[in-house]
Amino acid sequence: MTDPSDVGYDATTALVVVDLQNDFADPAGGLHVAGGEDLAAALGPHLVAARAAGALVVLTQDWHPPRTPHFDTDGGPWPVHCVAGTWGAELVDGLDVHADDPVVRKGTGGEDGYSGFSVRDPVSGEVDRTELQGHLERHGVRRVVVTGLAGDVCVAATAHDALALGYETLYPLDLTRFVERQPGDGERTVTRLREAGARVL
Image (cartoon, rainbow, N blue to C red; front, top):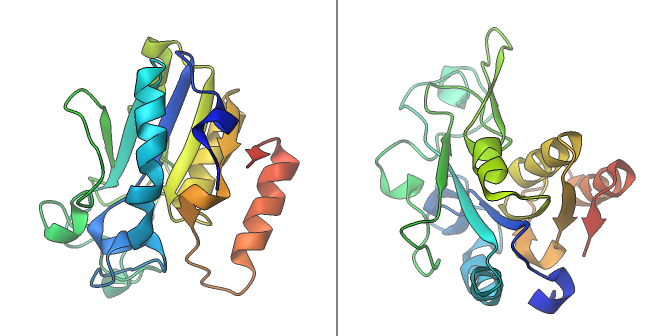
């Protein structure tokens, strides 16, 4: 298990919790990631340590309209999930969220919202930024710890964008879970992140 002391949280660090929502983390969710139901408890000590050290805690949240080319019902790759305002889109019970923690919602206009930093129109391919980088800049963040669901999709995309933007990026394996649509996706993800410069814990 990754201990918070292994991370060394400080005021220039952000703990980014990606898409820890019912549809992904709960076995009854529309796109359940195996083991996701355990993550809120695993993150607890890290949330405590991060806040005690003055680190920023940021959460991302898929927040899709009912119809979008992102969903398989409209020709996309994914089952319907995290529809705005539904139980599936809510952050999981047991996740210690404070009122002043920024929450970055993505995919609100039907875009693909893989990375916490950006969204992409699934038809035109146009990419727009989310609010995440702005939150990090205002807090003076130089290092990000990327956690949540799923490790080989949205967590990986967020980590790659963080690296591209120049942030030191930590990727604790016990604070994520993999959807593995294809066998070996998790292992390939870890290899690519290491090669890109992430510190895999």
